[in-house]
Length: 461
Image (cartoon, rainbow, N blue to C red):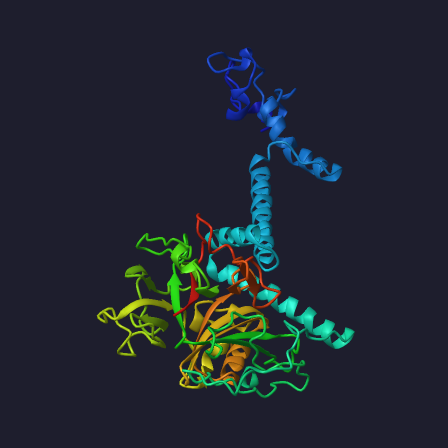
């Protein structure tokens, strides 16, 4: 039997695929019948015209191929375009934040502000890691300049040939002069004047009294002779230490913000001796601060703490381990915390290479501007600061200067700063930086709007 011999009806509706019917002309639309010869579908000719939609679907791959060959973006890829725009935007913002972190290591207020934005967006740990990468590269450049180009370290001041110990030994003082022994060089290439205490250029004592402030510098790192630590030493029998909270830092959960300014009464006459930086931002460790009876940030147990009593005594210890360091002690008028002890009973903390002990996992091993406060067994107060330092080399310098207890304070070039003050014969307040590489002018602590960070200041008793 041939296909023509199959049983057929005289009139029959030709079934069309659903897709073709959707766009068929009215004569082929549902509800109307198309009369054709009764023959098998494989012999039906001509074929019905395909719809425009089906043609477009069939040629879509062809159009994409042509577009890729021409180097043009095909139409209808909005999702891809949005993804690319979003990726470029994220990359741009990330690059800006990374640049901001690096800028914070090089310049002033704007760079520091951008670094704060980075901490808010990327987080403190990622920001610290970026800073650590940059500082590692910068340290490598410094070492190459020193070894390959023969660059030398620079003394922060012109050395004096007269030491405080022999300024006026014949005078009889009511107070014995604080011990100022010469410190043995810590490197083979020590600069002239390193380790020799001097009072030149510092606030003078009252007539007939011994010096109450002295300074020196040390090079604690043999691999980095250009790394110089400048130190101030204060006789706490003649001066008193005070603490001021900043207008924005340390901030904290209690919402208390300090004045950020030295009291006007403490700037009268020749009372003010020195000002130097405080500790970390709240975001970098949540370390406690209290002054003048106001708790700005609650204390953290097990953390290094410098405390001041009503009688003006200053001591360093660990909160919760030293019985004097407690909220139940009514004799405390101020305290500031900042990580782990750098020096504990004369011993350098073995965790100096572990950044987590100071709240920044990456930065403690990095070489940058650093500062610290220490106490000697004679009861004198030490402040130390310098560039290209790790926590370990900073602690080594303090240990050589006689510190038996020490606490690292703030780091990075924007925040490490110290100034001394004295009146001229005409009554003008004269300001001097401890290290010429430090930022600031020294009068930021006198402005009515206040300084943003906490700081210490020293007054004559």
